[in-house]
Image 1: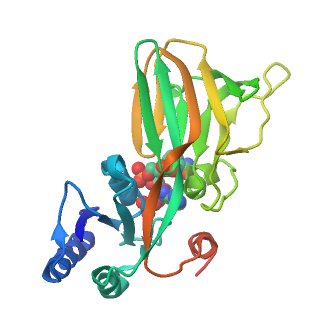
Image 2: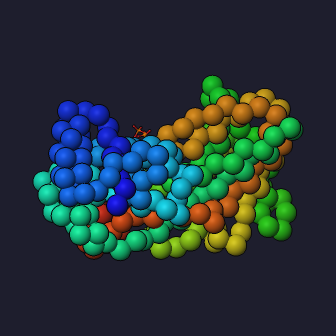
Image 3: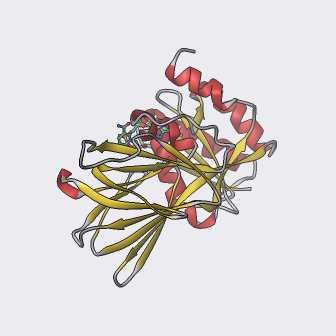
Length: 263
Ligand code: NAP
């Protein structure tokens, strides 16, 4: 099997990376940066987000697994003390593949279209904190005019990240869905939005029309872009999924409990 390790590059993560490379190559596996079948991320959930974006062009061929060298993560759910057990299981190639949904963001500008995949979420704001004014359309046409700081369209596995801070629901990643939350909407007698997070199935889309040609701030997970002359933005549950190598059961709700309540 061909593998690659993406590390946060702190001392503990780098030492684990060295040890894993030594043992895995010693067992006849090949370190392959170009086309790995298994990507091991060592660090935190942020490290796994970077690994996902590096290999998002080969999601059908690549599986991911995460080791956390800080606190328990949602994607990085193996702890450093379990690394020997994890290495044995990788060598035996004894794993199941589970798929988590992604959000596709299509940004249509006057002269080009940009497409992005998010593992956590896609957010839309104005640069420098000015108010975002957009028309939000669902399948049957205009739904609302939004004014406020921005909107966040989250994947189920990203529902425990920014979405949760915005009051969104935690959604089990077995649902092929996406969730829209408002970021500080203006609501008074003149401006009105629904005010609640909304969850969409994979057969629906959300379309945003901008009201100015000024650049907008589009964030895809940890990546930030300023894009001008946007005509429309469309959000959907992506056809592509991320594939995780699952070596042992670690139920999602248990991870939620251990991350947010207590272990
Ligand atoms: P960061 O600000 O360095 O870290 C954001 C925090 O979110 C880290 O503690 C990270 O865990 C955690 N995280 C990432 N994905 C998660 C998930 N699916 N469930 C629960 N926690 C998760 O930023 P970053 O490392 O570049 O990551 C970008 C992410 O930050 C975005 O995708 C967004 O979700 C999140 N964010 C959150 C807020 C907020 O809650 N107010 C605001 C902006 C962005 P690790 O420490 O394990 O890496």
